[in-house]
Length: 236
Image (cartoon, rainbow, N blue to C red; front, side, top):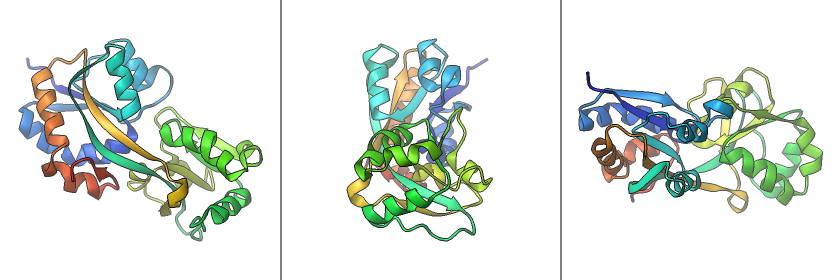
C-alpha cells in the first residue's frame, strides 16, 4: 500500500493549500492528507510534531520557523522555497460598524474603545502583543482585555460567535470565516509582512514528490490561486 502524501501547514497558507490540493495530487500521483492546518500550541503544534518525528512530506510555515527546522535537522534545505507573503488584518462581527483603523491614531482609538480583542498563537499574535501595542503606546491599557486564541482555533470564529469584539490575524486566515466583516489590513506604517515557506521534513516518505510539489507551489502556475486567498505569491 502506498503511503499518502502528508502536509502540515500553518493557518495563513491553509486556504491556498486547499485550493491547490487537487493540482498537487495530480502532480505527485499520490493521495494527499492534510495533517494539520495550524501552527497550533502545545503537543499539537507543528514544531512539536516535527520534533517528535511525526511523518510529513511537506511543511509550510512562516519562513523563520522553516529556517529553524532546517538548522535543527528537522527539515531538508534541498528544495525549500518561499511561497507567499501575508499581512496582518483586523475584523469585526458581521453587522458591526466598520472600525476606523486607517491611521495609527484611528487604530489606537479603536483599540482603546474595544471591549475585547482576540489574537492568535501565530506570528500575527506575537507581533500585535509584543510590538504593535507598544508602538501605539497602549500596551498596558489593552492587554487586560485581550484574549489569546490557540489550539488551532481561528480568531475569526471567535469574532463571529461574539467571543471577542474584534480580532487580529493574517488576512488569509480571516477571509474564509463566515460571520465576520470589514477585514482590513493594518495601515502601511504599522503593517507586518510575513513570508511563508515550504520545506521537506526529515521524516518525509515521498521526498522527490515533495520537492516537485514545492517547485509547483512557488511557480507562476500556482500564483492565481494563492493570490485569491489574500496572499501575495512569492513568484511575480
